Length: 277
Ligand SMILES: Nc1ncnc2c1ncn2[C@@H]1O[C@H](COP(=O)(O)OP(=O)(O)OP(=O)(O)O)[C@@H](O)[C@H]1O
Picture (cartoon, rainbow, N blue to C red):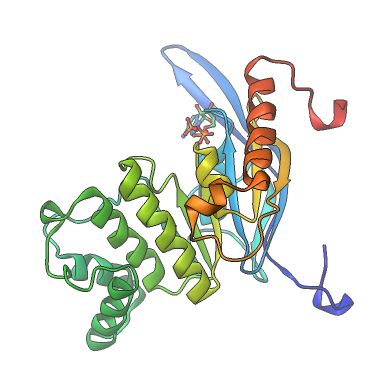
């Protein structure tokens, strides 16, 4: 790890040998699932990292441990200079479904996290308005969730996560439930917001296009037990918003193919563990 003492940049998130075992009780029998096995990963300040891999490889569990919603069985997660022991305002989470309060307007939903944080009313309104404008919902702030499209609800969820000014934005398949066009619009929004705010972003996706289009690095995980299989550096430099142009690049096709091949090797059971290679 680099530290300020040696002149290097300090990683924003350090995941150190994190393991997670769940105990499952079904009828009269008890079994355990090794959801994560000694996962280590460092995420640089301002970096975008995608977690991908087969169903059940522990992506959501890892994200929830970073968020502090789940406790690791062993190992630690450090965000900034603090070891994670629970939820905190330094991290914001966007879920696959925005989970908005149906009786509150978009503005009031975004204000909710700020209310919990104890921010005074006028300040809450100012911040919530600013974040809704940032995600392009300046004209729909007074609508309730049943008056918003799926994409608009996700934008409210994004604004809500950003309103507490987290250092790290965590997103669990944030666009997985949206149609292709809406999804692409939101992907571009995330890149624009990242350019404007410089937030560190860790997101879970099953969509390899999304992973390669948005991320600086893609972490491919493998199941049984959940672990890091391979980390891919994305060699596409410069602005990413022109998805049409990016998809036409050789680097895009090659990297996507490399991740897909490795993923398929796991599906067919011929992917040795890192230490066995
Ligand atoms: N609360 C829980 N109790 C018991 N087992 C759990 C719990 N949460 C997750 N698991 C198990 O841990 C493993 C990893 O689950 P997790 O949801 O993290 O995987 P995932 O990679 O996000 O899957 P998917 O891509 O299908 O969403 C799975 O075997 C799952 O059944």
